[in-house]
Image 1 (cartoon, rainbow, N blue to C red):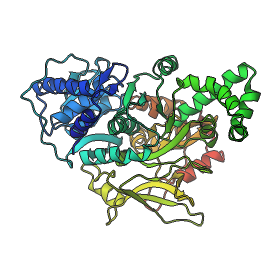
Image 2 (cartoon, rainbow, N blue to C red):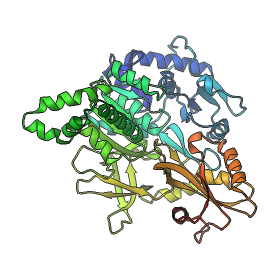
Image 3 (cartoon, helix red, strand yellow):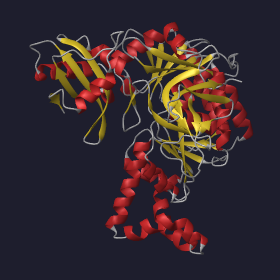
Image 4 (spheres, rainbow, N blue to C red):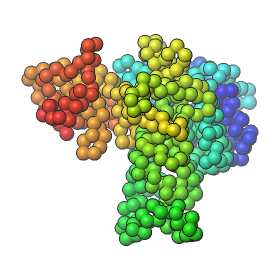
Amino acid sequence: MNMYQLLERTAQTYPDNLYLVREGVSYKNFIDLVKARAASMDKAGVKKGDVVGILSHNIPEFPITLFAIWYLGGTVLLLDTNLTPFEYDNMAATTNCKLVCAEKSFVYKTDRFNFYDITKKDGKVDPDLMPAATESLDVATMSFTSGSTGTPKVVPLTHFNLVECANSLEDMAEWIHPADYLYGFLPMYHVFGFAVEILATLHFGAGVLLQPTVNPKEIMADFKKFSPQIIPAVPRLWEVFRNKIIDNVKAQKKWWLVSFILKYGKTLQKIGMGALVRKVQKPILDVFGGRARLLIAGGAATKPEVETFYERLGLTFIQGYGLTETVGPICISKPTKKRFPFAFGGPTSNNECEIRDKNEDGVGVLWLRGHQVFGGYLNNEAANAEIFDERGFFNTGDMVSMDKNGELHFAGRKKQVIVLDSGKNVYPDELEGMFITIPGVKNVAVFEHKVKDKTVTYGVFSVEDGMTLEKLGAEIAAANKKVASYKWVTHFAMTTEDLPLTSTQKVKHHVVRQNLIEGKYPDRHE
């Protein structure tokens, strides 16, 4: 089965269930919109095997275009809306993408590819245009996990990978039901948003309430009007919601009561005081529209106190773990006792894991194998040889342990990926490759660091004599403009000493970071 066939199956099973909730579009009607868009793109020259980019916020035309490209047998290049023209040009060249479907605000002059207005109106369905004969192992999507400048890492995912991820989400059938509304403000170009807003909805016959912004007023208005049952978000947002709720309750001088009820709610229910518990919980649950049943977190680790807060409100809170290389959620937690710290469950159906090279605390490297694991980076044999073993297991580079319930617990990253508070990933090697070209810079280490309790991307620069902090700052600011703003290095330190290196001349990031903490790099810009 390919992704368009999965859509057809869902539309046949749940023809009248809403798919695009805000627009009132049922699955049956959505199929017609996809066919009309496919006819338009066919006239624009899109054919089987083409790589077609999508550069758009969460608007209805995104999923319509997505499935239209698959209808025609194309591969979708999912483009991050936060990048720069310089990056888009490189990404298109790397993947041989000649056409990008974009909102008008993203259009710029380029000779690398053509733009297609994703918001343009389509004509009629072409009755002679049939779905392409797409095989399950054909590439459905491509995404960049790092190196949108310089050496790229492109993840091709097959239709088989995507369909199997959708099937594996049956593990969540206890909490997601047909005709549920799933709130969709996670960007669909990101694997987390893609997995829940495209794959989960399709599997269960649920609807997605697309929201292209993260404006709190619009989000709250949506909650009130549409009352979604399922809300996925990055942990940072769940923390913001929680803090705002607590602040509002405190302003009403009711926190003493609410905190007591939340802490002892289960005990009070057992002794017949459930009505009081529900009365206290109701105004808080009404913030989410009153029907919320399932909250999903992913993209980063959730603080235990945040997860506990929502569970004490009677909501189910699930933490997922995954990578672009695994179509997102390949491990999903189940609501159990004592899941902290940072538990994210075990592998979903048709996937398996091994923890290797464990230390005395049972912490080791997580290796994964299964239907959701990709087949290797595009045109990157050297990287693929490093991450796959002879049995087909994929090295995630993440450090985990497993408890007696079989739940995996995140312990840290062996690889140097920086996860910001927003859940966005920053890849040091990309930035280091960019900064090393600055005249006067001998070496650079970029890593995750805390500044005033905020996770930032921090750089320590080894420079030649004569470099000043002001001059270096100007050069870094100029280099930052080549990449998305969330990747910018605005906190940095400078030293004329050489950075500590391994025998293979790689920077020892952990030593550099420790030196920074110990104050060995006094020339700082923070």
